Image (tube, rainbow, N blue to C red; front, side, top):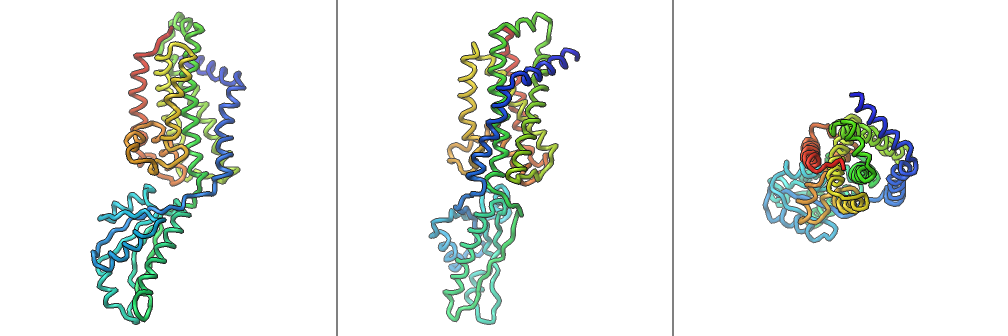
Length: 366
């Protein structure tokens, strides 16, 4: 245990003494966040993804559907189950879900000036306030046109809007969790691979092995020091984001830091694999870069995962950074409890276990 604490403190001193590396390691994600947040923080997409559940199946309901299909700003999906469509709305796959209940066509056919307007349930995703507002505007215009097409116009159909999640979020709220995930990946996968390779080439690992130091103790010290460093860096980034962009953590801080720890462990394990495979520090850097660079674009750091091409989705949903960035985002922006994000932390744990097993086979002292 004494050796473990000595190694942990030694690693923290190494981080503290190398102030140039520490400064730029921390400064880069903050500069990136400030740059993108300043230019794109209040922007949002204007394309509408909308699901319609037609439970009526009448000519009138089909006519209403054709109104949306002819609108170029709407991507329309026809669904058969309201609950499934609402679940996908909660997952941000749609901005608007509309239900056409049974009796819609019959009501329009028998409508008179004395009749009450037929309410169409329309659910909108307030996580994307701009798109939801635009979607409701388009829906209102379409259903109002249905009423106007009826002779002796009076409101025949009315939209009954219902918000699913009352959050006011911008691009900066999407970006900050991704920046934290990117920082964890770079600090651990790239950092561990480069440091361990350099220590091996300089003979530091060989001298450690000569002291009868166990590999498990050495790795545990590395883990503890990097977990502490990553937690402090993540908290600092979130403080800067809160002060400058009013980004809030709507969920549990404990859950957020738990995902920071899981991400640190998973990417450290991958870093140990790269360090074991690389022959020298010069080759460790390119190998780590080759592995991390695609993750920046496929892992949901800067762009939503569900907006990527369909053929990439199976790959995207395997990557550890996609689960880390999504889990951080759901915890911060929506406040989803930790255990409701079980598929994300289970995936990170799986990466951790498998990667550490491989790392234990490839790790070399010299």
